[in-house]
Length: 420
Ligand code: AMP
Ligand code: MG
Image 1 (cartoon, rainbow, N blue to C red):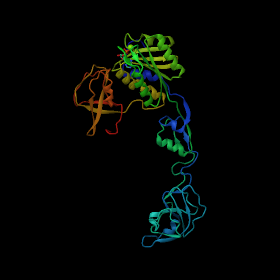
Image 2 (image 1 turned 120 degrees about the vertical axis):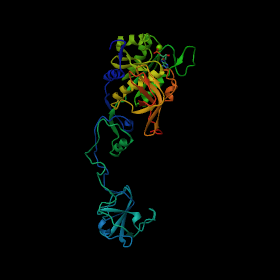
Image 3 (image 1 turned 90 degrees about the horizontal axis):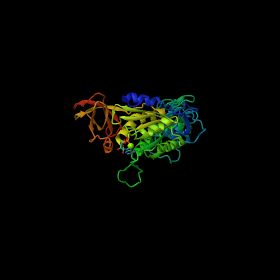
Image 4 (image 1 turned 120 degrees about the horizontal axis):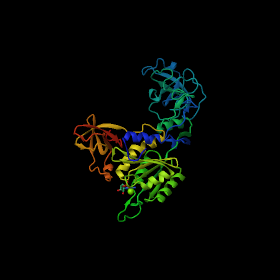
């Protein structure tokens, strides 16, 4: 990529994504697999339920005994046993008899149905009551009623989850029910984060004249964490080659899968990062037809992909959203790489400079659609414009004026339940 080449957002994204690959798999304890991508098919070794069991507290019996049972003509059955969940009863149910059974208890041999306790004369009695000698049942049932059949949920030998599936709490539950305590999932990307600039102070240092605290390092670590990846904080490198090289070396030792730096990529400012990457990797400096976030560096350091974001906090966050986020998701084996979008109606006139613009906005529901309002000053140093926003409103390339009533695509940073 030649220096100062102008790219569209899509071209830059395509190039960034071409430089990263899905990471290898690792076996992890089940709970560590939450929100990660399954790297194996899971075949059930057992059926679920594993045995026929009752879906109700009631009586296990033969449906044929209740053929004529009704409230007016109840059937009387002799109670020959009791089976609780977790127990096994080997007494066989025969014509004219019943076994008291609790939800989840295995169906005793001989029985072919369960009648709920509510449909017997024992309905109002609690479970602690001694076993009745006989019961009266005031309804009929079909063979199989109120029985959970073995394999009804999962059959042994069945592929229950496929490679590529993202594990949610319900998948974790299914795996636990199958006794699978460890699974192969795609490794979490390790992302080394570097802030560059002589003006930067650590978070706990008192402010000094001309200096500001490193906020980008924290924003980016939070963005990385929110994606389920692992941030490796490299801290601050001053504007010298030695400082930058030393920090990147630390990232290599921490086995980073991706470097993300901020600042030092605008014209006249990038020489330090550029020099280091040119000596020990490769780098292209791009102008992206995007606002904010025009400058972007992309390359590699000792073979590890490297993404250099702009320094201004809003530009850095928007560039991360657009490029780093997609790269990290791809490395994690995930898709889609974009945020969800909605079409939102704007109520105020918007002016742009012809670049693809990402305006901080609040999207709210309005009738059957959505409405968007910008969150005030759009300066790329106004971090609170992002704090107030739940979306980035995209003004397409080549558009200079958007009139009230038009619709724009809103890139949803959050998807607030209160609104949607
Ligand atoms: P630069 O890309 O080096 O020209 O920086 C652009 C702007 O971003 C300057 O105002 C920097 O002070 C600011 N900046 C750079 N790095 C950070 C950072 N880590 N945290 C907060 N602001 C930063
Ligand atoms: Mg700088």
